[in-house]
Amino acid sequence: MYDFIEAFKKDLKSYPPDRLRRIAKQGGWSLGQLIDHLIAVADEYLSHVAFCAQSVEEQPAGKTEAGEDVYLRGAFPPIRIKLPDTPEFTPSNERSKEELLAGLDRIERDMLAWELQLEAINPSMKWQHGGFGWLNAREWFDLIGMHTRHHFRQKAELEALTA
Image (cartoon, rainbow, N blue to C red; front, side, top):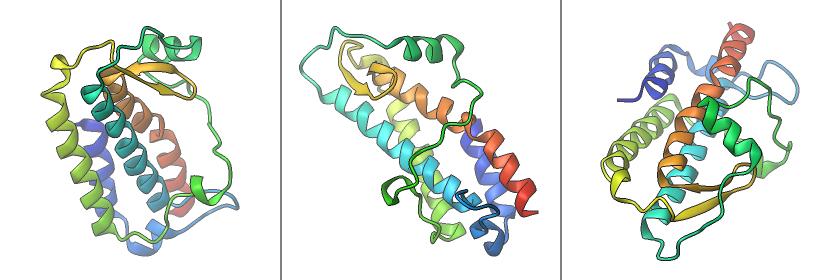
């Protein structure tokens, strides 16, 4: 199992429904929205893993400087990244605890399935990330953990604000 997903699942189980949906500050997210965001991004990254697995055209281009830095660190930089405040970037605040748990369980199952296949995927098959450049299947897979861990601090802040 994946420790970063298990940590979110464990805490999610303890949140009452009103706390899960509570938005503590203007322009911020609820705990439920944060988890919905993590599920959506993991789904997106896994779709890029699948693209790399099915691709037939090698991509010689590599990562950007920011991408090289993230993979060298093995983590996103410890900065707040603000997405545009538009509907397409605003996660749902309507999902139930059960729906969110099911989403995290599904991501974990999908990751386990892909992890077994990663070594067989040609590392020259890539999909472009908007900030990090061209990433192969292993890099997209690893980005799920880096992205989720990046949100641990935000989770702690939201927990404090909604306690």
